[in-house]
Length: 329
Image 1: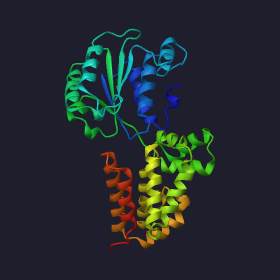
Image 2: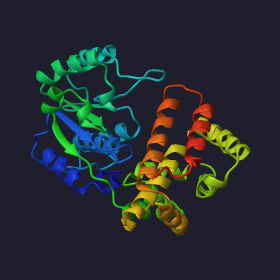
Image 3: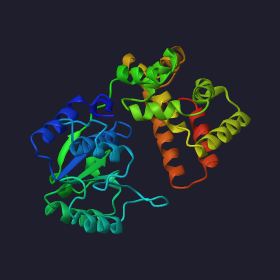
Image 4: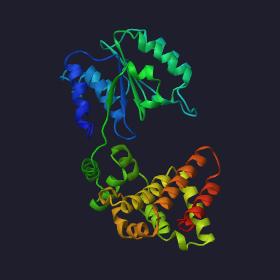
């Protein structure tokens, strides 16, 4: 693999290639983009290209450094992330980073550290990292990966070269999915649902029975006003089970009402679920904008409750009974 494997980020790739060519790799970078846009992939390929002994500003894939990167055992490359069972990057992890970063590289002339979800550092960890960014070793580079740079300390952001990744076009994601063997109609659906994130698209097609489950959820939503209590309990039980299997239930629920809002406001090109366009159009004519916004807020609130460990079934029951309520306008 090389920079060619990074999809839809030509501008960011060119910036990083120029850094390598001109031998002016920064001591710190901040890659910002939503989840699945390719931040980790870009950081890996950047490190690999910078270590490569043969290719210019890219990786050859065959030299010893490239092989070590591919086998994930390059001594001068390390990824830092939230440890399993934890919710944040701790100060102990940053202390370990500071200890390691002081030692000179083993196989290259520099070292690269990648921190995933850097916005999840504790306050103490962030302050500790700041001191390293203020006086970094000349041979070390730290790459912070974030979805929202606004969640980092401004002093950390100011000490990094910022590179913002773009949303990948629907067409490029569709090409990727077709190359993965997905049929055209389904590739069209997923490329719209992915909302500019090739990583999200690839995750979706790995889910067993995704399209069948999606159909059941949307067939329920399109007639939700006619559903009785037993049917609501049944869909609640189903979604609770799907959530335990990491199925993106709330993404589908939000996309459904977001599409109704787009049609309501005549942004037809922005509709994600075009295979349900006629049903969505009918609902857009029936619902007020105020009610659509209310429903989206209810979905977001229910997701937040579940993330805070409130019982899935209870939260979903409340949600669907409220979504079933007639328009309040």
